[in-house]
Length: 286
Ligand code: ADP
Image (cartoon, rainbow, N blue to C red):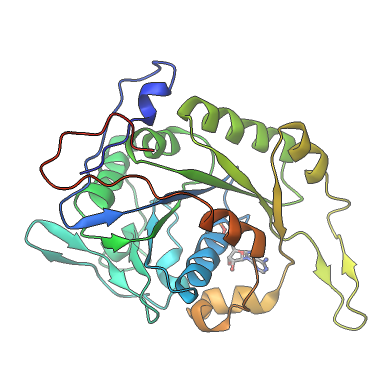
């Protein structure tokens, strides 16, 4: 069983909570996808990376930690489906191409029910999605983070063995502040930031193909350079992408090569050591 040791490096802010991995899960890499606020396309980037990794033959799961705004199940055509149990473990739902998903939406009676849970209950849900979910062997578990760097994000970083973070921004964001917060959080948790994806970066003119930066010139390059971060990819506003997310057809509709640098950054993350059952806890999970 692997436990997370990163919390020990969190400057002693809070006592580390280590959520244990169950004996039916064998997750090699955990990659968190983070944004400063909701609606910038964090879930779209999470889902797209999952699709591309799975197309490459990897075993992929998505832990939807955006408990109060879950959008992963719908993106994968799982609207209305419910997660089942196996003994005292939950089974993730499995998409057409084999991507495993666990989300609060899969536990609700109706997908339109609001999640009116307070912080500790949300933290409990994250624990269930890690410790009480049978993920099986996974090459990558992508974590669709709650927006921002608040309480729930902290819980995820303290409790799961996160190996890397992809930050998603959009040009209308307060980019410098969001990048600074993400970098500070990552530093405190000793987790590397793999780089930044700028979503809704531009619109491509349907007639001449020119990229139009409707929110003005992006400041991301200089901000990222100031923190020594890589700008991984820029995604245009693409109504076809929004329609595919809505229709639950992202898996089939996503153009190959949509996020090439972010994909390469995820693939470059080394697998963390997974202990054989019965071994003593490892001193460092990285
Ligand atoms: P977040 O996870 O940051 O809250 P989502 O990924 O759920 O954001 O995206 C919010 C909405 O914007 C969704 O309806 C999604 O389909 C749409 N969207 C995100 N990125 C794009 C894009 N590049 N082009 C068109 N629509 C997008």
